[in-house]
Length: 387
Ligand SMILES: [Mn+2]
Image 1: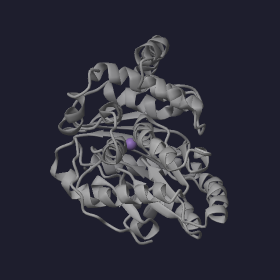
Image 2: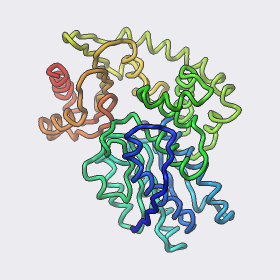
Image 3: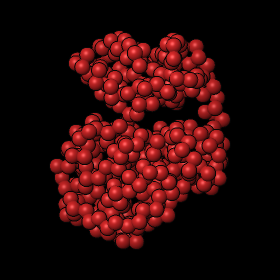
Image 4: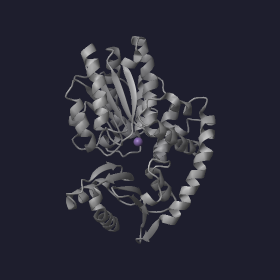
């Protein structure tokens, strides 16, 4: 597709050289969205169903919706949909559902709809779904901060990602969604601050937002537990209940959920302490956790949360690995661990293992076939030891 770029002043709340480098792709994204609204095209906004993904999507929805209504106030749901993704990638099934809406819209409006993927979309696992979507006349905008597949630009029109301009994951998808929304209209800084706290972005980045909101970091940390609890229940529903975390019901909502979660977290901390195996590797520590022993399928906290709990029980340079029969999750601090490195090593050594997944170097998950589980654990531990 052709995007007419009008270079306008970008005025980001976050002051950082990386944001300047992101300005061209942010500008493209802004004009892509504006154009889609002006032409009354369908916009589907797909986002990861965690705090970060929701924050970016809600920020965008809040500025896009009034613009959509100003253009034409009839049937706004036929021109804007926000849908959470429960998988850490753009799932093929989700893509087929979207394709149904997009095809209807194409038939009716004959103009390319716009698909926005936020906090997901830039990985190799997204490519199949993207290929299928792009068989139709659909514009694709990816806003992500995960480690990107090197050829992802072949499968989208615009890709906004701090990693594409030399950064890491600290400028989260929620922050990017907020900054983009704030270019389109006026957005709430709380979305960016909350996203950064929830995704554990470095102080250099998240503090720029935190100092501009009345909530404390401690409160937002509690809120992230409560939010994830609710988001997990909502699954792929486009339910507006989560907006209570950002309006006048915020404190009351947190106060309803938090006492329950606080107790659960305390229980899981004790369980993790009992289950974790600690190995001193000189300059770093290896922590091993059999996640099936300390989590219940489908229950809160999720396996991802449990490994986070385990990781934060310790300090210093360390790698925490949590594994089950078909996955291994990593949490890393001050160790030069590279998820892409271990992923290709496993793929190479275990060609029958169907190894997939990714994320960040400091937090990621790989999946594999149960038949290679023991070898995966061995290879992973050897890899960590030689770092
Ligand atoms: Mn994220």
